[in-house]
Image (tube, rainbow, N blue to C red; front, side, top):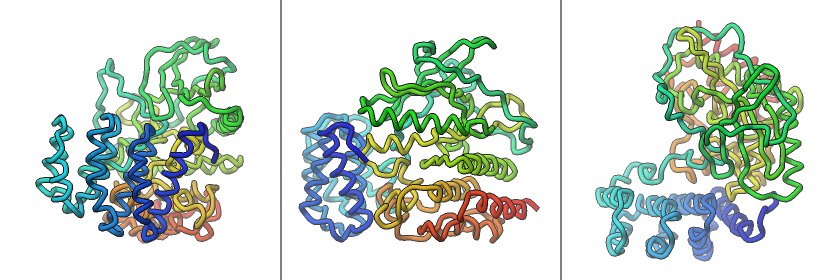
Length: 456
């Protein structure tokens, strides 16, 4: 991984190193290391601060006394640093408060701070010791790292919060039509409205003209200025994505370029993301979604194309607008998470809960390859079938469990799930890549057979 900017790159390297050590060898964290972690909270880069907070959370879990002296430093940062960095400081204090609630409470009450809603909620939670069972109430959800952005709800729509689809229904007889691909500069796309932003991209709903008439699409523009080598990697990644987007469960690329900054235009999906629908799917629809997504990855691997960052946030539904037909799932952002790793202190390229062991500890488990996609498919299938992930904890602790603990079998969280499904998912989620399935096709065959047995 190279650094985009020399200054921030140093912070990113320190943050990545500290987080990796906290995950793999927390007992090796020294007081000097804790001081280095605390210094990272002054960074302007949110992902650097996130890494620092998760590293402290891991140290708290393994060696609470090592961070007890950090409270005064963190609280003093609330007074000296701008509010834009307070969120991660509160997060770290929340982790420490799970072991030292009185220490954190007293330090906060001694500080003359502006008691806005967030601060009051935090102080009240510490005072009432609501952290005794879980730090996640104060630490926030594990999915807060979102580099690619989330399409914002369309406030002009009358369907901003769609109800869960009926459990009955069937898949469409054919996939929805896709917009035509064009070879055009970014100026050929007329911006209609902003559709949100992530830490690395801006998103716009755009229109463009073809012989078939006006088309709508989604423009994603990377915010960062990057060296020419990144432009070359970006172009290669988008070319690979385009080479496989003839599959009906892969979001098609309309166009892409690097001037003035890297950008790409893709089909605009009007439905929700899979991450928003988990827990509300019927068994039949869940099995169908798994089949379509696994088949899409199988198709891509057949052409030598990896995703490298699969998660439910990258599965977006095309609306069918028919009550008896299911919305169509499509997998997006092929190769993009791996590219964006170069702009962040987080080494995974995915939210922590969806990281594969090799993304957390590559020195121990190897690099990202086709087997990583198999792990992610197993993880997503697990979540689709059970409504939850194998490990539930604050992000740093989840990363630690990913490399040290075996996930519980899926049937523990889903009544009636047959042993055959447990067997398939357990193999896909092995920490060592050599013990997972050799190919996605093998995984597809065995999981398909196990799920057919579950449907009988």
